[in-house]
Image 1 (spheres, rainbow, N blue to C red):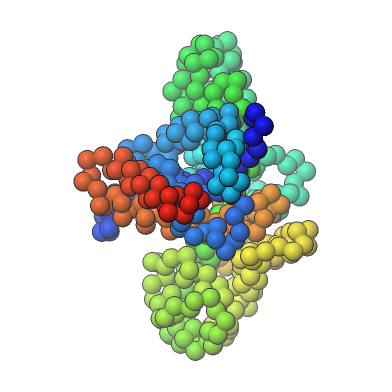
Image 2 (cartoon, one colour):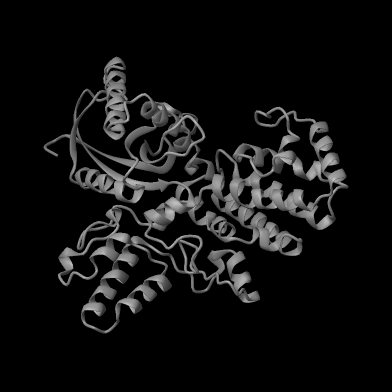
Length: 431
């Protein structure tokens, strides 16, 4: 460091797909954005604290992660910079703390087979087959931390499995079909390895870019660094499944009563209540996250005398659990984890006793049960939610729309770089 101050900067990466069109026609682009970890909660999710990295309409987020690997390889060696606060040059290092995104994106970044496979959890080894036994359901819906054979899937483990299978394949101990079956049984899906495993020289093997090269440490820990995202697992997961099942089971008169009940509830204290609450019943198939979150708050009151007691208890358990999930701060971590686990147990019990078991009992439920693991590591669930990165998609979309579409990736990067440079100069050297 030559006498300079040394700074370690933890970074949060967000990967997501969005449309590059303002119209409803889908024109998919995959983008990566970055955020400094450790920012105060009040400013962490502001758009000015989300930094554009790359976007592409041709390369997938998985392929674009090669850019991230190149960046973090440089950051691990250390970079020189001028620190405006200290008024001197410093040496800083960067590390990938976590990766946010929806469940398919997380599975892709972790080289996991995905939610539709027989090993739907990217973190543990739980099985979920078409033929479901009572033991499988109990294991799937219970707290993973209580499992005696608790297994945590990491990037290092995935690399070691692929290296071992590569050795066995070239030693002619297993065939290609057996190799693919063993990878599937391990819950591993790595396109780079699938393209290069036939190379006899180990140095020619390639893995997920975020896993690093052969002999190189991974840039992140895989599933342990891809926290459960409550937007897609709670609002767009269990609440969506329960709401659709509930509304579809109601008769036309009861649906009208539910609409009137929702409109008649005193909404004082609700977080930015939108107008037209009864629309959640009429357009139950076309709602967004905030609509599901609102209904979870209203359901225990609006559904009284409309549904049976089992369904009402289900919605009461959902309301209690969501109230615990959406906290800004945790004063006592052990107490919070105990309350969270207890609320999840109550919800699972109410689900199993309801008429909507198989509408709700899906992989997102098990992934939600992994949440205490991530809370211990990263803090309140709201802090690692993907809403801020998804909101930033609007800024990316507007810059793509304003380009000539000949090279939107380059044009978008240039526009963000110009804005960032101007802000840096105007603020006196601060970001």
